[in-house]
Image 1 (cartoon, rainbow, N blue to C red):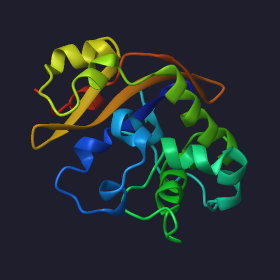
Image 2: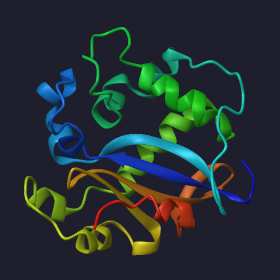
Image 3: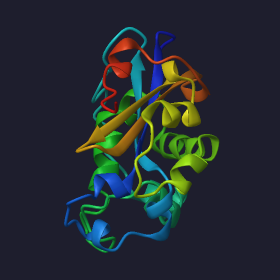
Length: 191
């Protein structure tokens, strides 16, 4: 990464994502998934527009996930499309590493650890906990997460499915919330 890049940290809201889906993780979600944002991904983003992808050919190493903590990865970075015991369960992590992590300048351990650390920095707002299954004002939700210029909400069928926040980077590590580029803000689909 270079100084003209930042990170987009993408959260999923599993109850919204799972609405109308028959994926194994939707049928039997872990308790954490029902009340907390989970990780969708962490990717470098150009400060002006767009993002780099697939920057190296370094293959995903599944043993790194064990070093980071398999149970923590399943709880906070789930792939609800597969049962946890399915051999394809880590294909989502492989995709995120191959497409985005290879552009971060971080090792696989550092990349996955950085995303997990952000879940401790950017908690699921109480507004979400108090409003599960109810309508929430999008402006109030944005404000509960971060200043409006630092957050982009994703909705589908009038349900929240994800949240993007933007982070400054120092030495390739996400360190502080920052304003999102216009193209990230324009991905906001919650009105």
